[in-house]
Length: 97
Image 1 (cartoon, rainbow, N blue to C red):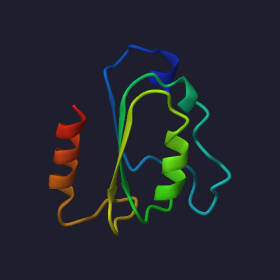
Image 2: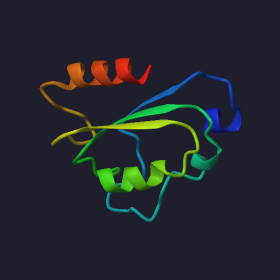
Image 3: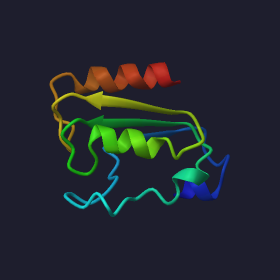
Image 4: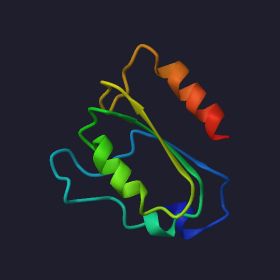
């Protein structure tokens, strides 16, 4: 939210398991600040995250006018537990930069 309020404050955002909405409450989106984001953002999200499923996050990221990258961790929940999580995150971060 701070990056949306103060463009240029930081160079990029790195978000792990962004809580798009409370579990089982997809109508309570936490995206009001998204249209004001001018900072490139890398989102790492599990495909089974109850705080935001892939389709929900993909739709929400369209609200952000800056560059966004979404990396999905297959089968992972909000905790991002996955045997190859370190490799996946490192690779996504390197590509994003």
